[in-house]
Amino acid sequence: MQIGLILLTVAYVLSQFFRAFLAVLSGPLQQDLGVDAEALAFASGLWFISFAAMQIPVGWALDTIGPKRTASALMLVGCGGGAMLFAAAGSALHINLAMILIGIGCSPVLMASFYIFAREFSPQKFATLAGLIIGIGTLGNLISSYPMALAEDLVGWRTSMLALAGLSALVAVGVQFTVRDPAKTQATTKGSLLDLLRMPVIWLILPIALVNYMPPGAIRGIWIGPYLQDVFGYDTAQVGIASMVMSAAMIGGVLLYGPLDRIFGTRKWVIVAGSALTLACIGWLWMFPAASPVVSIAMMSGVGFFGATFPVIMAHGKSFFPAHLAGRGVTLLNLFGIGGVGLAQFATGRLHTAYQGSDVTAPYTAVFGFLGLMLAVGLVLYLFSKDNTG
Image 1 (cartoon, rainbow, N blue to C red):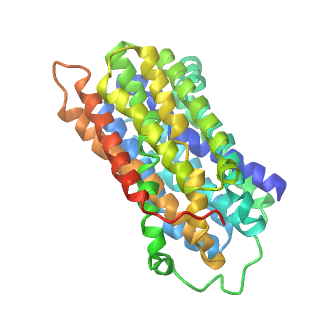
Image 2 (cartoon, one colour):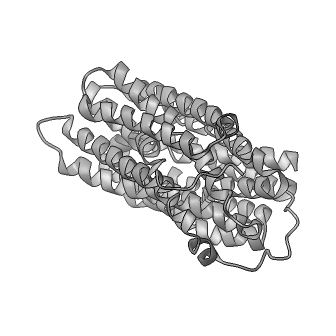
């Protein structure tokens, strides 16, 4: 099982890579295929939406088929096939289809690990283990920054994507042969998603799950690239370095948040504090979008660092789920978390186009304002939720 969890972690590294690499390729894709910022935001949104849409069937599959076959099959077809299609892309349509396939392929990876954690380890260790795998997995976010920009410069984005297709296939096969499915409970096949939605306590956690990852996911996923290029004149290599700084901050944030619920004896107020600090950083970007590239990168890094509360949100929600619905429960939260970023990418892409004009900062002021508003609304609703450290 240890080797299996290591491979699932590698798979999650790839998942983190695929959700963020478009930001670095915005310049080359614009030059080679004529794909502009709005089209890339739409393609990024398709990754998140297809990923989110798969969470319900993935949750059912984890509870009934098991994590081994669920993760290996979807990753082989989705990530392997989608990356190959991306490498051969000749238009925005091909990019969109490839991102849908890759989103489907990445959809079971983290939840397969969470399912194993929920079934094989004590509840008190869940947030720490979840934070650890997300922290390690976020290395993919780091690799999708300057290393991807360097690979694009050395061998081109098409060759780079072919190599990623091959790596995805190898990891998928490895998962099939090394992961062991946890023993099923007697009630594994009973119950449904509706049983979870009938729990009032979940409804005040879902809003923060929906909006928490919006700012770091949307900014790192696409907007850091066009923003730094348009407002400060950064080139692909400079965008790659800035993206690497933000990615490193996201890794640090995830690792920090992992044990905080046990240290402070609360999950709710750890999430509230982190979300408030995230809101402060994105508020600065909204008010002063052109003040300084160094400070802007620092604020985006702050969004990534303080906004890395998702493992604690997952642990908060999971603490209310019955054991036989653990798979469907964590995938429900993941549906909201990932789906929220997809919806945000669709909305911010349109806002970016709508505010085009003589002021180069206006489109990004609209983007940052939207992301901040969504987080503020979700945070206010979450204040009425019930804490649980069990």
